[in-house]
Structures are given as C-alpha cells and as structure tokens.
Image (cartoon, rainbow, N blue to C red; front, side, top):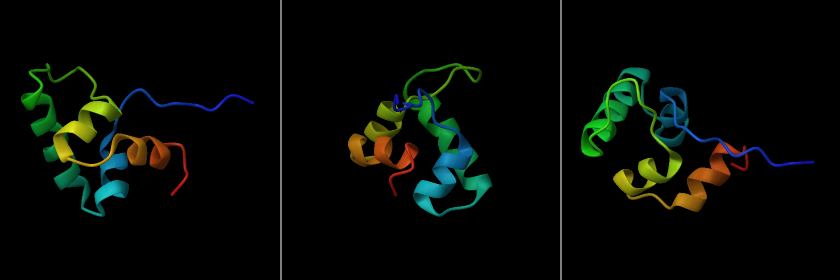
Length: 68
C-alpha cells in the first residue's frame, strides 16, 4: 500500500493545523502566496507553508497523512 503525500495546502488544512477560523486560514494562505511571489491561482506546498510558518516540515507532512 502506497502512502499518499499531498502536494498542496488548503485553507481547511491550515484550520486544522492552527485551530483558527476559515477566514484567518484564507488570509494566511494569501500571505504565504504573496511571500513566495505566487499568483492567486497557484498552490502552496507543505514545504512552503512550513518555511513561512516556522513549523517543522515533517510534522506538517505527518499531519496531512493523518498521523495527528
């Protein structure tokens, strides 16, 4: 059985990781995109989110796999 690794972060993920509201999560996602110079339709990777937020990349990837 393969483990599924997600390639992008969604507002719902940010909500679960931070415990904050959907509105805050969407705002944070916009800030991350601006930080990395991405266009509004481009996605944010878990690695980029980890770098911006200061959280450990491995913890975020484990969280996205359902390990938390």
